[in-house]
Structure formats: C-alpha cells, structure tokens
Amino acid sequence: MVNYRRAKVAGACYFLTLTLQDRSSDLLVRHHLELGRALRYMQLCKPCSLPAIVLLPDHVHMLMTLPVGDADYSSRIRLCKSSFVSALRKRVDVDVRLNAKGEANVWQRRFWEHLIRDEQDFAAHVDYIHINPLKHGLVETLEDWRFSSFHRYVRAGLLPAHWAGGAEQRIVLAGE
Image (cartoon, rainbow, N blue to C red):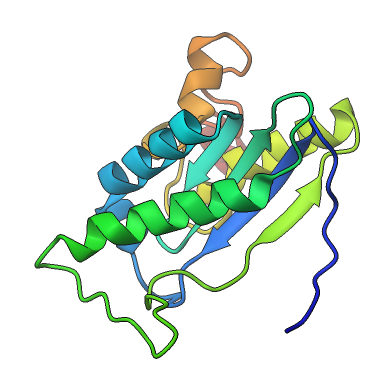
C-alpha cells in the first residue's frame, strides 16, 4: 500500500476536495439533502467547522477547521463519505454497487487536501470555492447556485450579492 504524505497540523484549516468516481454524474446535487445530513453527522461525531463549502454535481470543495489539538481530517472525510453512501444504499433510485473490497462505486478513493498557510491563503480558497459554479459554467451568477456557502457570506455582509459580477455588470461590459 502506498504511504501518502499529508500535512497534519492540529487545529489547522484545510482545503479539501472530494470527487465522485463518475465525473459525468450529478449525484451530489440530486442527493444534496443526503450529503448535507452526512456532513452534519460528521460534525456531530467529530466536531469541526466548515467555513466555506460548495457542492457541485460531481465534487465538493470545502474548508475544514479542526479543533485545537486535533489533526485528523481523514477520519472526518471517511465518515462523511461512508454516511453518504449508506444513505444512497437505502434508496431504490440509486445504483450503489460494492466491489470485492466492499468499496462502493460512489466516491473516488482518495481526496485532495491542502493545508491553509495564512489569512491570504484562506481568503484565496474561500474565493476559489465560491467562484466554482461560474468556473464550471453551471450558472451565470453566483446567486443562482443554491449549493454554496456564498449565500451565508452575503447574509453576513462578508461579500456583496454581485461579488463575482451580477447581471448589471455583464450588461455594462457587453455595451463597452
């Protein structure tokens, strides 16, 4: 088995990406309620905060801040993934199959992790998370993408509703 080197800093914040095996699937947005429950269950069992998150059809980006003295984000990801798979296996409209190792055909085995180094790195990753629906061409304005902490940032006054360009800005740019 390959021994992956991952940053492990207790109490740190990490940027994480979880991806479906089938990159053409929209499973995550179709079953966003189940994923939301899996994330809340993860936080209940293994406390952490999720300062920013975006759910896309085939992957999830999030920032996860761990409690002081705790560097174990891997078990949280494992718990979230397994809870989501368990919920899907109870549904008749989703074909979840297990391989010989008992692994479901839902998630890619691994995940991407990046240790957030400072406030500038944190801000850059919050922006990356929130801009992702536009980057992937899923919407024309961020306000139209339901599955993002962007809306929480707007309600808290941390970002303007048209942060990444609203309809008014596109009209001005098109007329120039």
